[in-house]
Image (cartoon, rainbow, N blue to C red; front, side, top):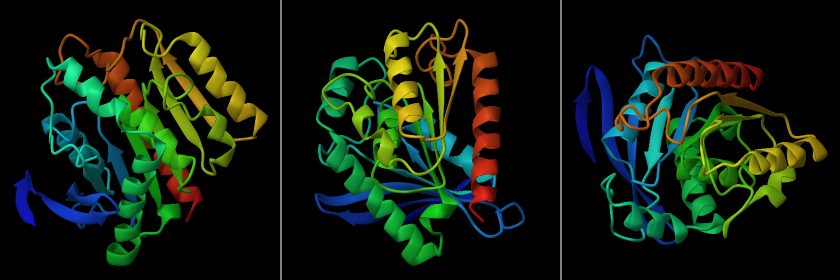
Length: 250
């Protein structure tokens, strides 16, 4: 375990045992004065580029909101920790190798350690995913009941080789989808299919579409993708949504 000061937050890397070997997890604890009571957690699921500096920063932002925040390295099977933003081919290869079952297994391992070591149950935990992590979050929610799930522009939920829209009925907590209307990776028909599946199975789902925003609009580490106003509104909406869901689960 390596501990570092992230501002005055307590951030470290821990290693969990999974069915496919050890997995690193970036963990950030909230300040004692700001931690939710009873405690709650957010599991942050990475973009296609790994648990890089940006995802670590986002994880710290959730700790600033009072959550114990953890970002598991879903690329641990490959031995590749992070991928440069310019290496799109490698990123696509890595996420293409990750279907539903390894994602569910990895996220399940994080839920287990939260319950066993931190006393935080699944009904006080939320999934939040970005890009590939959005698909991962939705996928995990179909098998692992948690308080809430937030999907930031997650392609591949309704179409593609690892689509899980047919598992929507298995989701127990509310879901928030945040997408840009200029995102080519999430066409309108995919969003409509997810909304229809949720309605058919009485899953509580809310979708928010940001005009003029493309893919990865929340990623301020990529200036060519970042849309400041949409990012601000999406973050505010996500944190309010989580706060309501976690409180409801108390």
